Length: 358
Length: 107
Image 1 (cartoon, rainbow over the protein chains, first blue to last red):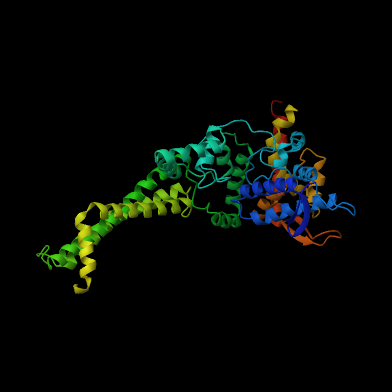
Image 2: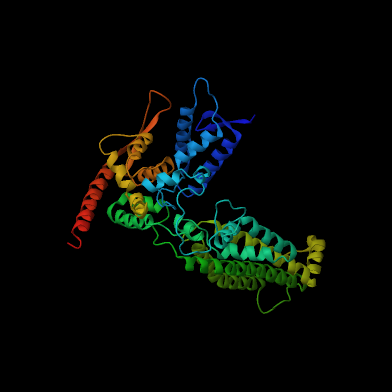
């Protein structure tokens, strides 16, 4: 006796054996992950679900109201692995594919088709099956080991030495995310097939030819020139935390200077730097901050652009923002703990605040 | 078979051209396309065809319209756009050109 699960395929209900449900789930999850970057992913997924539903219908009849696991596997085998339209990561098709299709792996839809030959191997972060940012999945693909071991190593390092966290953070910034099928293939050390070259040539030809294509390219964010290469993205990732830390440190320095100046001003009753009016000192401080901050800010934005793979917006922005906040908070805490005068002054301020006039 | 494997990427790259060709004269839905291609060297599967058609639609080569079917839900019937028709003519010309080149090489 086996459990039966009712699945909703594009708004049709089908009773499926539970192992078959798992297989369906895995197939659609893989499809969704592969189509993550596709603007029409929802529509394609609905089409795929409908196609599966149509195939399910052929197995149902007046005296049969259940799809067995074997039938699900047969259906998924017939569907074939979902390949990203513009840049199929794996070569299947025609006569050879007809044989490859009958391998049992095709049912899991993960490693369908013949294994591509090996190509140049590069370290990327891989979004598919990631836990945090895809660092571990990328390392696992790079070294060809199961991701569990890499994760275990990081957790152990983090627990024992704290170094695991730092290494993870460093890799998060430095290692670019695999975004195209080509990069994903390189992350697994697989050779990318000729389709990519054909597509690229075709794309250039179309851009030259039709204005409508240009409009579409702009929407996809491809209109601003070529995507930065691997080295540029690595450099961006390397510099981004540096600029982020610098920017946070500058901000904290501004706060500390302000606090010190105000402290002196109030404590000495305006006696600090008597040759200059107090507002001029404050203005000078802000001008200095802007002078130092502008190049750092520009550097940070440029590093962000490259770390994001040639786009203004992206994940690097979030990571950089989080790092900025963490560094600023850590520095402020350190300053509060390390500078006894500041602590005393703040306490004194808060107790005597009502007596102060600026 | 070694030869079919050698030509895998080429057949793959030609799939778009082949699809433009089979919907040139009549509107087809995906199951029909798969059926027509099944007997040829260009046999393919839903997992490949749906993403490809979606890409071709974004490139304004094909479009679809919903049509009721006697059995089951309405279907998407794909057809060429004017841009797709022009692309097909270009591709056919280029394909002919490629063939001629190969035939005359080394002769």
